[in-house]
Image (cartoon, rainbow, N blue to C red; front, side, top):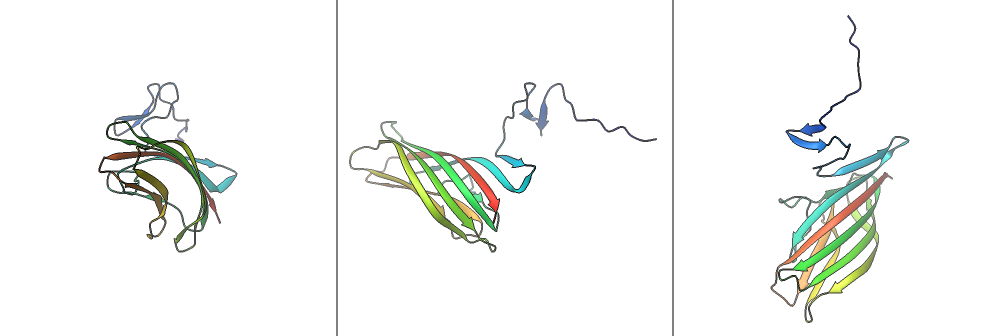
Length: 168
């Protein structure tokens, strides 16, 4: 006897390992990353990430130093909204970095161009905080390199990053 295949339906939402990822109102929740793909352009994706770091470290997508993974043979348009705050909350820095990044056939990552827009600079006098695109030297990996000078205060960095990747 033939089975009738029906569309998936769940009254209470959908979960993975008991963690809700779709609620009853059709909202996506508790996702590490979100990738959008156009069905007409299978070679292009848009993925959003949250990255964090402290002091003068490389921003990561997890607590073990994970960097963004770029597919080989792609051109990537990467936009990051980054905020840094010191431990007292008395200093802050907010920037937007827009970059065009090539990842060639063997995984070498090259930043082709980058534009940094400073949204707010409330860094305490005598201190310098910096954030720049980071080609890790590792195949298919990309991130941001945070820096601080003139202080031993802990600086927390948080980034919302969008990667639009197109086969090249």
